[in-house]
Amino acid sequence: MAKKKFKGKYRIESHRLKGWDYSSEGLYYITIVTQHRECNLGRIENKQMILSDFGKIVNDEWYKSFEIRDELFLDEYVIMPNHIHAIIELKKMGADGGADGGADGGADGRRGERPFASTSRNTPHIPHRLPQSISSFIAGFKSAVNSKIDDYIDEHHLDIPKYNRNNHFFQPNYHDHIIRDQRSHYNIKNYIRKNPDNWKGDRFNF
Image (cartoon, rainbow, N blue to C red; front, side, top):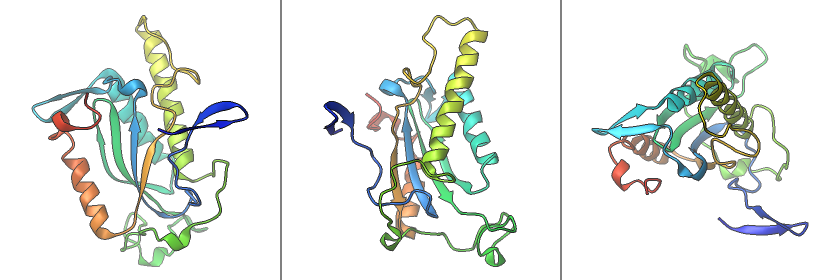
């Protein structure tokens, strides 16, 4: 990843798309990787993911993150030994508690058509983390994982470093791709579902 200097110090370039408002409705393909790509979330056996104790904590916190956020819906998801792939739908809620345009929605409050992103929705770059955005969701999830795993380390008297702002369980950044059409959505969804089958050739497996 490219590094540039800011005030005389190197900083890692963000993966975020410049000019995109990450609180905009749409479908986002997200990849979150463990620090140093350590395979501490579990292992693949017979093309099936077997979660470790840390992996179970991460899985629980992942689902809890959606339970407490009305604007987010989980479309597809897989935990791998050292990373997570997911398609997340961001849909803002209306004042009546339903999704905007809820007259067209189903039982879960979603509209019948996917809110595929368009480049016309680009906005000037906003440097701070917006509420009800993908970035705020990821930050909250990572923080919860750090806390829960630290509790596990204490409870089981494990002789390993605890996780905090200076020692992250996941890499500080994350990868995202804004899904713009049905074909892309189908291909990415299929890739996620087949990820355990293809672990031997996975780019994160080295």
